[in-house]
Image (cartoon, rainbow, N blue to C red; front, side):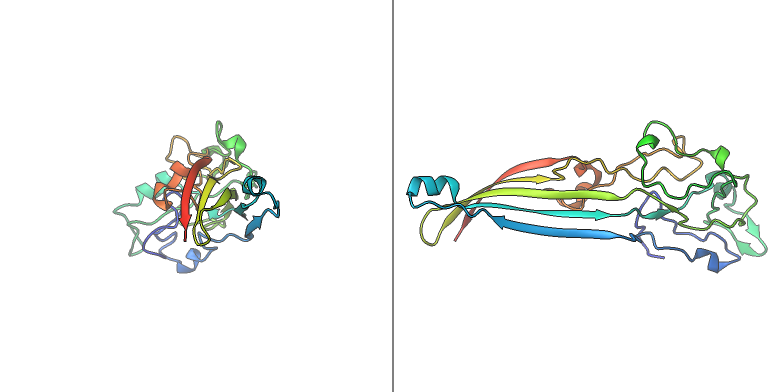
Length: 231
């Protein structure tokens, strides 16, 4: 497992069964089965022999990016049972830091949560959907569930003004997540949380004018006006 979690909400960095290391085997936390991305640049082919008209209609450039992926896997954790293991010792194996996975009842068959709009105000699942923990048992392992995907894109419209033969001034308008599409995170997976089964966080856009450190503060549409001298 990596030293840093892929997700601070859904990644499991501890053993799910100290007596069976094979139980740790599962899809990676960053396993997006389908991903489409692309970029485009289009210079509008408008020109005129009249200088003023050409200055108005010429030099326009439209560019942007598009990206889509399916959801990442996540695990549902029996938080109460996991917390009760701290300091115990099972069969001579220290269980400190172990994680017990919640095991769904036969009536709970949903594994894919690609559509989680309904989980924002009400939980998609509750503790009643899972069996009472019996320790490191169960057939549903780590990362057995799939969260929602991601759809995003950026777009810019720029106008080039020729200042001299070697210098151009570029005025631009850029919009990040210009769809203003809401990308929800996975339902909260720990039974100890009061919002267990509900969407408690958003997915942040991979691009923004502030860099990646801003995280979820950049999930909404952000627009900016830019100016650039090209020489």
